[in-house]
Image (cartoon, rainbow, N blue to C red; front, side, top):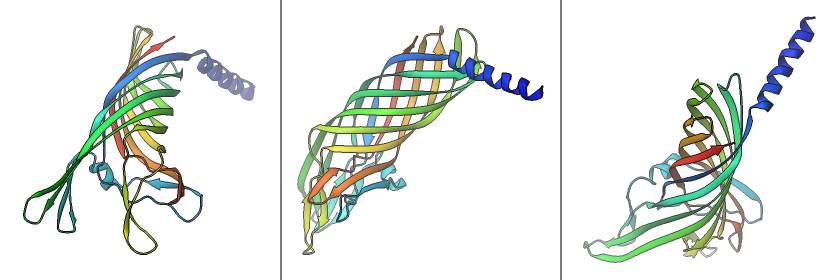
Length: 252
């Protein structure tokens, strides 16, 4: 008898969660920054796929200008700054009287960033000033866990956290890395236009009048995926980007 009651309770919870599955479409936009100093590409001598974690120092570099000693002077590097916009769709699944749930989503968008490098020689004269501008086509898949602090039939407010896998295709611009070649000399390495990265997501969410959801989201880098070798790069390290955005979703 107890087993039947437990099975009935579990079945009711599952049915309830399925009944609360709701499709959504939305728009999102916000501020994006990225580190202006990147480590050399991490490629071996094979076409293996590698996952490279993003160090905390690179994350901090996305918010402040950096100085690096170079031959006969100093290189001053500003972080890349810009914006991102996009559309998204997916479904959210709430249960336990809408206090707990999850959602999945897919997105397509555009991002644009710019930054500059200034070299200063030992006498204080500016040797070169280079401005870099990049634009990307962005696509992503995300999964969030959601918890509401308050929930009623027409209003809810809570927090969410999850992860997002993004593919970026560079539309304009290029970025170069200094690497050591086999002879021990420095040379430029221009990576592929294709990049793939993994980010963590946290934010605040509010549902108004049962259909209008507003999200405030912070997206922080976890790692990047690379593939190929120096002579044949298939997936390059992306700019270490951080995004703060606001979004609106209509929930059906």
